[in-house]
Image (tube, rainbow, N blue to C red; front, side, top):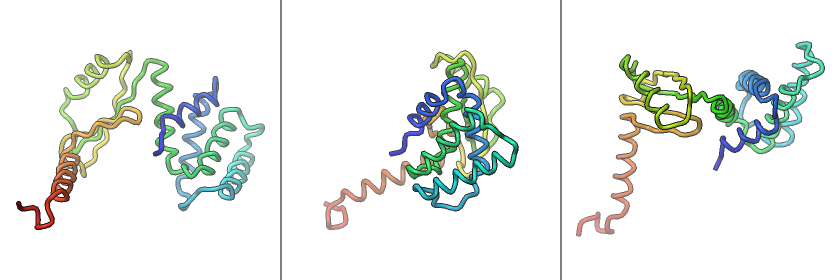
Length: 189
């Protein structure tokens, strides 16, 4: 199982005082590398990617490479070697969340089928502040029509799904599990 929170903690520890600049570099590199074809994994891919990133930094006039950028490059190379490159976006989001929490800011993403009621955001901020030690709550609202109704709340790597689509999927799984436990004569006794 992949643990973006552990990778994020390792990235912050490796960056130390340069964590903010490291995060900015990580996000920029991941954005520019996101169009690479899959799979991007293994030692050979890491060597090729390292040459490409360092050549790009040199041609952009970045010499010597700043510590935050250097750590971001090395971190991405480790992800590639370990086969977790496609999880880079989740890790960057978790790094951003952890750095925000250190400052007392908690980032909350709300995915909703449509625009929420105007009172929703202030009520959500108050509820999150009451449940956490956050001094400030930032809310980002994304419209996802495929949710059909309700919302999905994302705080770091934690997801609370109160969407209609999620409820339908849960019911379908429960029905499948129930039908799989029936007797061999079709489930009738």
